[in-house]
Length: 337
Image (cartoon, rainbow, N blue to C red; front, side, top):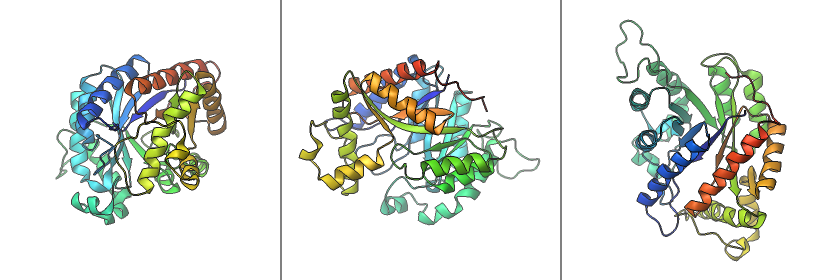
């Protein structure tokens, strides 16, 4: 079966609080585990009134503590914001507490604006050091060399699986060079998707894994009808448009007609950036997912989707799991890494 996973940014819907969003995350994680999802990933964002997962490692620990078997991890940690040693200690601690269940996805973007990046005390210039920081971090998670002066405790020897995240050729090239699994941010920045996958697979050399492993990120807005799926999607479209307007905030309530709250150019922009999405009834979602899998041949799918109503969001991921299980008989999984 083609593995399917879930990316949750702990969205804060309009009318709700961060506490509500985090409670929803724990509930959704238990639901995802029961539905057979392979991984449950959370992502680092800062200075956002619409996302509750800023302290990503803390939330990962809570999700792992409230589940039993599902892998839990970061999709991802924005490494330029952090010392590699601190991240090694955080995820080494998580792996020590929840052995065999922790993933560490790394991104190069700050996950915030420049002013907030400075408040994080690392600075924008750290992105230039990203490849070296990744290598340093991986080293801390491996077996320490004799006489090594700096050791991550916990962390050393935990071998936490590291993933490279990206939306450009840079991440694809680095993942291929280091022999890491690669997750592409196609759910919001799909323009370089096909080129990045080709570069990653053609340039890959064995490292942490023996063969390339590409994860495709897909937004899902699944419901009982195509019309209801489209309505659910309008919250994320509005959120994306608000972000581009410089007015990011809580996840908006859905609307029946997006044209009542956005201009035609804004709608075209949002639809372009969010085009790697499956929207509608189970039959429509299945047809679209099958097409994406046939064209791109991912080794794994990670589903995401900002939906205002928590019950509707749970149902959307439930339909996604049903579709992935049904597609298992049609699309054989690639050999494991």
